[in-house]
Length: 234
Image (cartoon, rainbow, N blue to C red):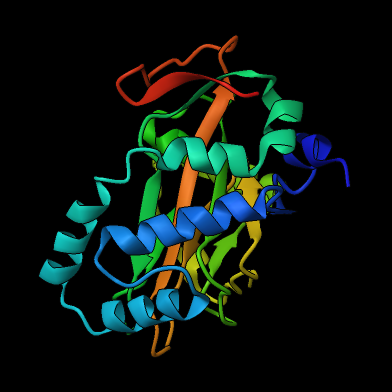
């Protein structure tokens, strides 16, 4: 598959393998260690997922504060997919200063994330996003993505109505089938693709990390170097 073509003129997203799996495993172990759960085995991420599934929002927020100590997360994410990123953007990059950790707990009304696209938050149209779970995602517990052409049509209808994320986009929550991924896989998508997740039933929480990046030769537009930083990919 030609990933660049798929992102620009195809579906707008693609499932991609983690290229440096040893580094990505280290990323996961570092993540686990930051919130005081024993590391170095797959069982520990599941132990953590079980703990998170039973936490209230205040406890989860405290855990998220601990994750702020994981300052090298963006670089580790980028270096887990070096060939892919270099082919798309070259070596000289702007990368998200602090990659995002997403922890969703199961249950009605808890795990939903409304359909949205990255441009809504001021991300440059030249940006790409990689979302990767730190474990296998069970059926119906991942994120869903709405193909580029369909996303454009929805955005155009909303623009004509003077809306952003209006009833048309929000109705996309219904009957969406999330994409299941194995640990060691990620999804790369462009900033025009509508995406989100649905409530899921599980005994375990879902943990993923996402990073945004673009060529340093492209304009940042609304975002600036408080959000993104220069990084040279070797």
